[in-house]
Length: 306
Image 1 (cartoon, rainbow, N blue to C red):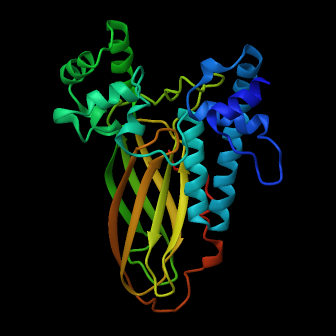
Image 2: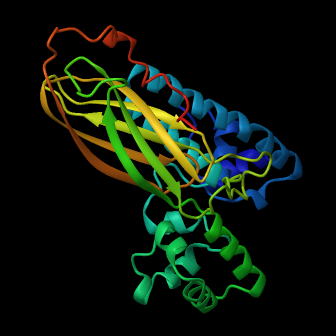
Image 3: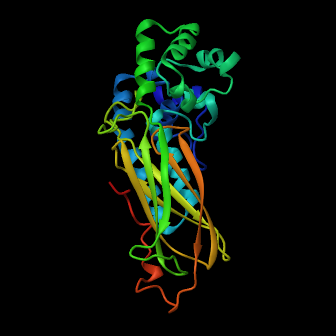
């Protein structure tokens, strides 16, 4: 009866051919709408126990899609993963949704916060505010002293990833040639950490049953005559300085225009993008330098370099 009442209140639709929504459907809706307080003790325990399993399933879908070369499926699985970790509805985007990740901010407080000089405030710009400006803004929307401390701790922990350098090269070669197995190396810095520090577990108060580690995904798209192809690699290194590395087969002679993006798998709204170009020549002895383009492992790699 409790599940039926929740399903009716949340307007959870049952799958076609089924009389009523399943327990999993209802619990998922409760979680994404942050209505955990409406659950009885036993249902709350059920939700807490199943969330880590759903998280692993979403990551497994992303990994399989990465191996099979389905970029849209990768992005969809990671959107689901972020929704589970942060208790936000899938598809939620923009400043309002992003700011719900800040402790003690709800929809009404966010509306007040985004008035005046902070109309475009999102999670990244929130973390970049000075301590005094952030405190003044949050006090104005009613946060208590303890709530202010919680929000400040969150702001310091939110990842602020920057690209230090990006290069494309072929190991052991001075030039890049068509059909070579080239390497994209992106040097990254976590600006919210001091040298030698490492990122801890993400802030996920509605996902309290386990600690969720911070991780990022590097996507790389290179234009070619036969169409663009996107490759991915998951970057799990939590150090302050990180090298993200991805290998690919060079598709054409001349100027190759590429784009790479880094997006966080655990926070909504954290992503950076950059363009990169490189020149490729025709090899003196056409071939691939002993490497088989079919051995390109960029889509299968699960980790960035240390």
